[in-house]
Image (cartoon, rainbow, N blue to C red; front, side):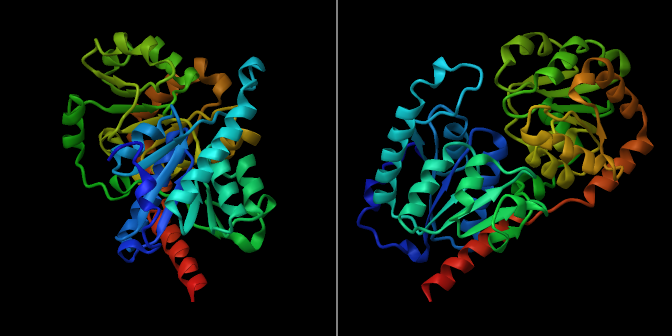
Length: 385
């Protein structure tokens, strides 16, 4: 499907085209927002095959690529987030925000959604805010333990707010909250790929322990610097590496890494189910979606929380599992001195790997997408009666 599908054709179409309803799913910016959004869309389509779904994201962001790859149409807004490090870059922000509201007005008028679902990211704000102004039911999925500012503002007038954990009534009206967990892609939750198949996909050996390094879709500088410094040290230790560098600094690392036969490296891994299947242990940031996927994948993991996340919630995410012997953690300011040793020590300790994998699996939620989709469709059905 085209990334910018012509939605003018929806103007005169009945609201329940093909027996289904129309949904706009808004937000993005990172994989942690995009992939749960796609999972929710897929769940809605499974429950109501006639549903029409249109995504709305920010021009130039990764949702403009990933959403069409998943088979959905997307409309891009001319919007940007606040740049904390440069006031000059924020000069045009008010004008972009006004333009985005005008774009949203046209999208809502053309598409006529029955409901709008926000998954976080600054592009979700003008869409849900405009929908709420028109009396269109709005739903929010907040994946983190510390809610984003846009979601907090939007939550006051949302129909229902889906959250991953308890205690979110400090951000949202308690009567609107439903604890659903975080949607994990079906390709991961339902994966049946064998380790041998996965290793063959990455061109790696069957007998060597495999370290998967994932710093998020944009990359994690501290993790990448350690892996780059030790990239030639893995082979003498009998280890091989699957390394997602992220897009931000990919060029800095890929040329050196790709010259090594025991390293597969790229700026992004499209088929994460294969990466998880191939891995014996994982190094990862501890954003909400990464945690949810690793619980489902049942992998021993060393978390390196991003220290500048709101209220340091990535450390909270990681510590919850560390305290239950379900993960290890290296603080970001200790990465240079500790991470490589932690990797090599865990790679040698099969018993520790098995204990961590078994314990983290207890926190897996595989049907969050179905819970959210079912709840939304039921609310809309009840409203119609």
